Length: 396
View (cartoon, rainbow, N blue to C red):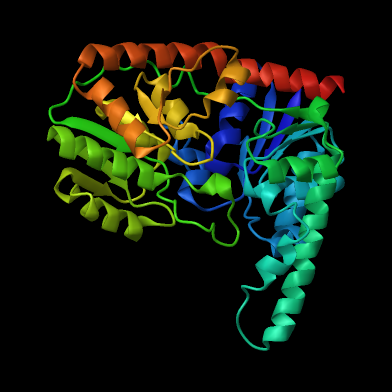
């Protein structure tokens, strides 16, 4: 079987592509963006530039690139038309009507909530500047409407749609329902590089080291082009750490990354909570560098809003680190059929309580870390996901 991929948000599709290769399938993978977060060489040591022959670097990053003819667009379409099935992420579903192969739309957020929402064309074009303004905005609106029309058609035509469990983002559920994508065509599961991320014994640092790789985005309302999924409740984490430190004066090494919509606001909150001397800031890291930070940390923070756990949590758990987060247990339990070992916290008081549970007891951290590793290995292995997806796409 020859499987084509387009789009690589957070390298999530690439995890699945590697699993297909491990199962013996031929893979054609198109990398379309320049950001490090979406490029496989910044996650895997064995992927280098120039890419191996199965990976193609074809810049297609905007509504202009997808809607107007170009050499890059033709090259991408020709590669994908040669595949038996295709997995389409980000702008990828907008190509489906021109590819004409059995498809899975792998939707991770804005590729559905924005790019498939008819109202988004006016929102996106309203941000255009320059003169003549009316002409630029008119052209922009037409291109966005064309892109959204193609994206919606591609999702509607896909045999399988991979998106969060129903109820996580009601607005996105409504969009899928409106496209005729019922629960019989929807699927979701976390996917982990379990073999790439072997269990790592806890370091038991003194002072206790915490790490958060999740974007520092938390102030409402969500900016144009984002959704509730993009707000991570980072303020809950900082306030919870502040409560814990003021109560116990326990030595902490708090590691944060300058990434997200509200870095400056987070710095101000850190100061307000009296944590400035305990925080070490890093510039944005590659995913491979994040793995190193997970190994060096005693525990990891993730999201505390109404979003979902991201790959940061799943990777940290695979490595054997306790994760404190709002894990949305009502969905995780339903998805895995068992209680999750995520250290549940959705308020500053709950963050403080989880810190009290874990900070003073190395054996508890190790037990939670082992349980986390086993949970991910048993429920989220990438090869099992690849088998299930292939079966469902081919059988429909």
